[in-house]
Length: 321
Image (cartoon, rainbow, N blue to C red; front, side, top):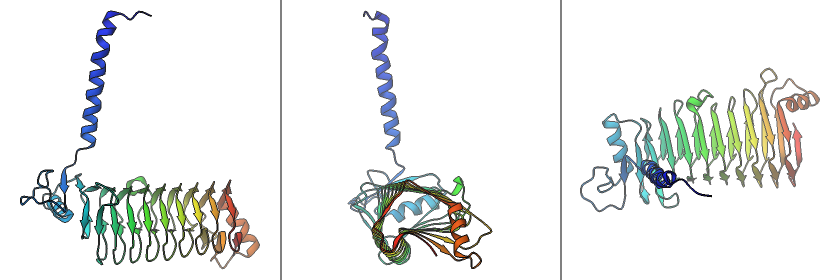
C-alpha cells in the first residue's frame, strides 16, 4: 500500500508533538513544591531540591506560616523523628516506603490530618504512643503505598464525619501491622480500603462503627487477636468483597446489631474466610428485643452473603448469638 507523501511528512511531526506532550506531563507529575532530606549536608535550607530542609516539620511550618495551600513535600530516604500536623491540603510523598520513616518515637501521634485534603504515599509511619495516624472530622485523606506499624493504640484512627465524598477516607496498597489495639478504627465516614494487609493487631484488624459507607475490597486481614473485621449494622452501607480473612484469634467477621428499628446493608461477597479461632461470621444480638429465631431472619435480611469460601474455622462457619 502506497502512503501519500504529505502523510509521510506529517507523521513524524505528529510523533514529535505527542512525545513532547508526554514528556511535559511526566515532568509535571514528577514536580514537587518542597524537598526534605535528613541526610543533607547543605548549610542553607530553603526547601529547594538543591537546599532541602532537614526536617518535615520545617517544611510544614513554612507552608503554615506563609498561608500556602495545596503544596506537596517530597521526603528523601531517612528517619524523621517527628510528630506532624498536616493542614492546608499539604501532601507528603516519600522516596521509598521501606526507607523513608516517620518515627513518632513515643509521641502521641505521628501524623494528624487537621481540616485538610491531603495525601501521603511511600512512607513508613511508626511508634506513636497512641495512634500512628489520626484523620480529623473535616479531613479528606488518601493513604497509599505506606507501612504503618507499632502504634500503641490504633494504626489509623478515622474520626466521625459525614459519610460523603467530601470527607472520604481512602487506604490503598498499604500495610498496617502490630497495632496496640485496632489496626483501622473508623467511625461514621465514607471509605475505600483496598489491596492492603492488616495484621497482628491486639484487637480487631478493621473496626467499623455505625454509619460507615463504602467498600473493603481485596485485603489480606490476618493474625489479629480479635475479629478480622467488626462492623455495626446500623446505618451502614458496606461491601466486603474479595478479602482474605484468615487466622484471626476470634471471628473472621463480626456483625453487631444494636437495634431492630434502623437497618443497614452489608454485602459479604467472594471472600475467603478460614482458619479463624472461633466463627467464620458471627452475628451478635445486642438488641435485647429479638429472640434467636427472629434475630436470624432480621440479620439475613440486611446482611447478604454470596460466593464466599468459608471453612476451617474453629467453632463453625456462622453463628447467630
